[in-house]
Structure formats: structure tokens, C-alpha cells
Length: 367
Image 1 (cartoon, rainbow, N blue to C red):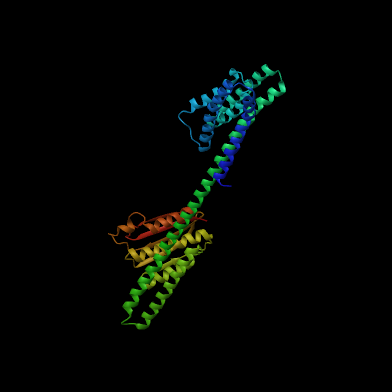
Image 2 (cartoon, rainbow, N blue to C red):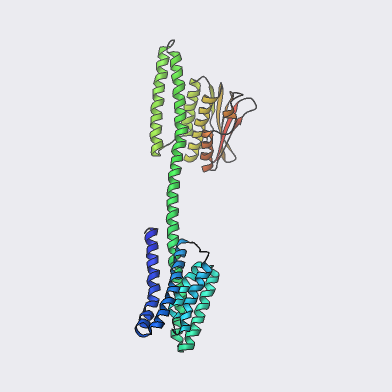
């Protein structure tokens, strides 16, 4: 059931109950009472129902009119005035309807006290007129029951609308999260692959004249990297991305070596979970991509260790250009993505220049 249909059903139920409480005495009065008395009765009914349905509408919308005290007072007067005009027992039909707006529009604590007072006053008034304990108690009880029914119908309708809005917000958040995932994975993965393609293409071009077999080998490797990049894009789009730290370290070491950068690898005997493994693998990919793009490194080390229940990954190179503000300054888009990945599993990321003129990237995740 949608919130619109729930609201319509709630309004229809309240209208049906509201009309039902007064239709029988109204018909009886129109059939037997003088025209002048009926005219006054119709005027009182208008004074009662206009603010009554205005209050119900405000309650469904969750708003409060600045004229609320005045309109509630008008409905209260229209509830009990006919008793003074000679319509004995009239409040037995209108007081239960007044109880609904009282509970909805006033603070519930004070509204409950006021409705209880109305019920006690109704019992006392009817008992003094008809001297019927059972009947007086029944009509007094209808004030509490009807007021509670109107309150519950409106509250349930509003809760239904709020839940549907929350569901829509969650669906939108899920879509945005998926877009961010695709954007981050494409940036981290495809950027690395494109960097590899550029490097291998440049190397093949330099080798073309002096070492044709080696150039062909580099072109073949370039084609393989391009195929892997295309496969990665498809995997990102389908959400089937799966990376491992060991595979990524081996791939990174081979790429660094082919680019003339010596790479030393020291991986500890650790068994991370899938989420940790992927986060660490992404860190290796991002770190190596930044080395190839932004540094003048000649050596690089990739090290993992287990420190006090946390897996520690460290990537260090020796070639930070002194004037390269992109690597020494605030985190770029790729490193921001790493921070987000690490935070999702309770980890941290740090990046900055070393005292020896190099650059260090570290990630720690809990075991």
C-alpha cells in the first residue's frame, strides 16, 4: 500500500466516523424540531466540522497553524454549546471527535489529561441528566476510544509515509554508492592500466630501431595489458571485481622492473580476509601508479607485516621530485579512494615524503 492510498484510507475512515456520530441526531432534529432551532443547529455543526477537518488535515501533514488555539477553541465551543441551546446529549456525539485533534495537535501528555477530563465531565453530565450509570460510562468511554482511534490512524499513516520516504532515500543512497564504487574502481584500476600501456608503448617505440624482438615483446605485453584493462572495466560494471594482494604485488614488481625501477618485495605470512586483501591490493596499485606517474624513483620497496593485530603495508620509493606538490601535498583522488576503502574496514592510510627525499605510502587494516 502506498502512502497516498494509506492517507486516503485514513481520511475516509475519520470522515465516516465523524459523520456517523452526528448524522442520527441531526436527522432526528430536522424531522421534529422547529426550523429556527435547526438553523442554529446547522450553524453549530458548521462551526464544529470546519475546524475539525482543518485539524485532521494539519495532523496528516504534520503541520501546526498559527491559529491553532483559536480554531481548537471554536471546535470546543461548538462541541458543548448545543447542550446550552437545548440539545441534550449533543456532546456525547461531538466530544469523541474533539478528542482526536486534542491528542494530535497538543503535546500528548497534556492532550491525554484533557481527554481524560472530558470523559469524566461527560460521565458526570450524562449521569446527572439520565441517571444511567451504564449509559453514561459508555458515552464517556467513547471519548477516549474514538480519540485514540483517530490519533492512531493519523500516526500510522504518517509513519507509513515516513517509511516509504526512508526507503526511497535508501534506494537513492544505494545508487549513489554504486556510482561512487564504479567511479573509484575505474579511477584506480583503469588509471593504472593506462599508465602501463603508455610506459610499454614508449619502451616499444625506443626499442623498435635497435632491438626489434624486444620491441615486439613489449607490444605483445601492451596488448595483454589492454585486454586486461577491458576485462577490468567489464568487471567493474558488473560488480565482480576481485583483487588479491599477492597477485597485485607481483604485477607491480614486474611493471616497475620493466620501467627501470628496482623493486624489493618482502611479504609477511599473513592471511587477510577478502575485504582486507582487496583494500591492500588497491593500495599497492595506487602507490605504484603514483610512482610511475609522479616520481623519479630508481628503487622501490613493498613490505607487509603484522603489528599488534593489524596488517601493515608500506610502499617506499626514493624519487620524490622536490617541486612535485601533487605527491607531497594534499591527498589526490586516488589516495582519497584508498582512505575510503580503508575506513570501510576500520583501517587507516598515511602518505607523505620521507626524510631521505623519497615518498612513503602506508595502509593499516585490522586482522
